[in-house]
Image (cartoon, rainbow, N blue to C red):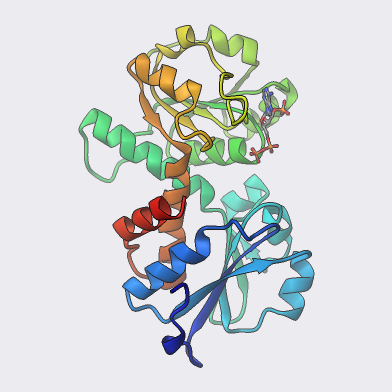
Length: 289
Ligand code: ATR
């Protein structure tokens, strides 16, 4: 069953995902199952919301302690926070909102943490290293795209000590984002012949290659040989042409689905203060896709 009704009482902590549409969301399955598995007294609801501001001011009682934000409300959600994490502020969007015990609504963006965590994990495996230091430190990290997801990856990798390059169709947007992370901006044409060094990391955040245009790719196979790891934010299809060709060139592929799974781990920990039941979350998502 989706909800653990026997447990619901005055102390139950209420959570929900705010979006429009929301019927397709896998999050209620994911979080209700995960809450139950660690005996956390919480529920998680799908919330079809038209206006975030109106929802927060009229329906949000103190019992509501955590919200996830999804399309199209990540930007509006930010405007409804009492305080916003500096990275979410820089990105201009939140993915998660927590009500502190004093009632203040705090906004975070954990989408980028999910992508960065997935990339770091894959790099640690590839390089056979453990430990606290980020394997991204000092690496050349190329982000394709300068929209919400592009900003998230650029700020996230910059925070980990990577040297950032932003490649975007609209060069001015690449320049603006690159300047904020002390990086370099290039055009998509320049990206084709961009190889100042080997072992670079690539992150595609554009929709190029997304279903139904699965034969498209933002970068030719020839250019991919200079990368050691390639992340694609697209998750339909899971294996994009970019990731398939990257793999053929010897790079480690990191799937867009990993970004979602990892941000769910982070969000669960923010909501409950407990370690996420990682395998259960993976299994729930596998079952509901
Ligand atoms: P998101 O929030 O998913 O990042 P977005 O903010 O709409 O979405 O950003 C989309 C990004 O994909 C932009 O960087 C966009 O490039 P422009 O800044 O030039 O618009 C890029 N993009 C989308 N379609 C593209 C295409 N067909 N070719 C190249 N880049 C594309």
